[in-house]
Length: 525
Image 1: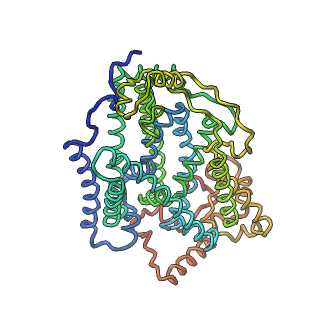
Image 2: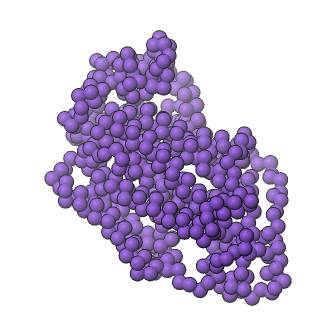
Image 3: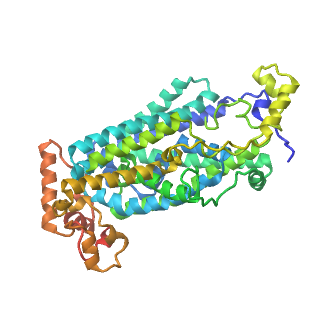
């Protein structure tokens, strides 16, 4: 294909914001802040924690679904996924299918338990199930993780703003951060959900506009797809069972399922949104609505990656250094898993382990005169030609060193490996310490009867054994724990208004009060 367009770096055009861009950007921040201000004024007479933290459990299903979707569809996804396709291939798209695993587990195991416990925080659950020490430990790890995660999330859009505006990098970080703090602090969960919904629509529109614009320059999406396919970027069926391969159909679906489960099932930011609806049924619908949304947004960003590769297929800006990057026992088990995965990550990084090489790129179609002028370099024609020839010749990767097996493992298995480590180590410690003998004394509300939820067709006698002694359906026994929980809250000086029974239907009240029944546990989950 003969290129009939110029790259920005081959021109001298100004790529900074113009007046219209500033208006659109300012309007986006203003609308987000205004939503928080609106709910602060509207709900100024409502001062209890139920309203602020859970929006009175009155949120509608669709905006909550959009809010759940937007929470972890950040700059990391919007910038990183196209870069992944550009540098490697389209195998990452399979992670949208992996979300089915997460949706099933979250909607039918995690959220029903959290909802019926009348809690506002997953860390309250940790204390009920594993004790105070584990709650503190889990909270500290979560805070550290979110601090690192939010740093990256803020850095991405701030870097983009810094490139197209006169704002400094730190100025961009502070501006975006202050707006988020403003509407969250003033408007509570209602403001968060509606702002997320608005921003999710902006994200959809932006990625769609980018896809259409890029496709038009190339002559159509089919042209972009054909170019990417001829250059090893289109790949969907890689069934290699080797855990060291970066992306395969198996590891992206299964490993991705564990990854999304950690995000949607137990992350405080997601759980708090999911339980802000009127009932467990509404929460399930909101979670399952995320699957088509996730499928659509990931298909969009992967398609943008295909178009991005096709656009730069003849002149890779990374090779030319025009851009530097393409993306501009609970306690024992928890600590062991954290240390284990941290060790693998550090070992992989320190040893510079690279098992799956990136797909080849070329600079053969670059306007080297314009690029040399841009970079203010004084290279000879010979050196330029040599560089072009080198970049167009696919390099055969050297055989990988015999690294330790876990160092060679694909990053996408990390979450699943951590989960398995927690379960195995926690189970072993429980067996050693005799914790397994106390299952009949455990609060049934903190355990989901798995077989009753997913295999209700099995005989009742078998399902009863699979409950491992947990006394599901024993109303008097459950009532004892509910009373104890309420007394503890009162002792701590907390008025538990997180769930006001007055605004819940009679059937929901019965579920919460009585827990699960032996006759039909599955329908109540």
